[in-house]
Length: 100
Ligand code: FES
Image (cartoon, rainbow, N blue to C red; front, top):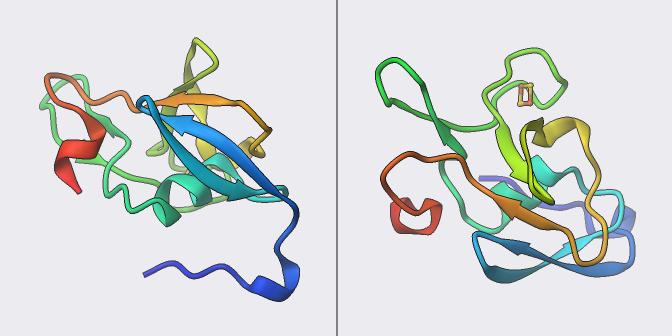
């Protein structure tokens, strides 16, 4: 379980994840916002279709790839949220919300 340190939380912003509006905080990475929203997977692998989710949270594992504002394969852990940002999971054949 991921929990935000409220003393360090920035200003509230709204982002959209797979079409649903979610509140995040300035300073959150997109990966943190995805996990805090309850998502358990952000993409599927190309070869086997296995589900993947953010793991290292520091730009090494590439398990957190998502589409951000229409640009595919962005590392969610390396990008901070911004007001109005649109994030789409890259899960083939199913919605990211459906697998919570
Ligand atoms: S979580 Fe590992 S690269 Fe983003």
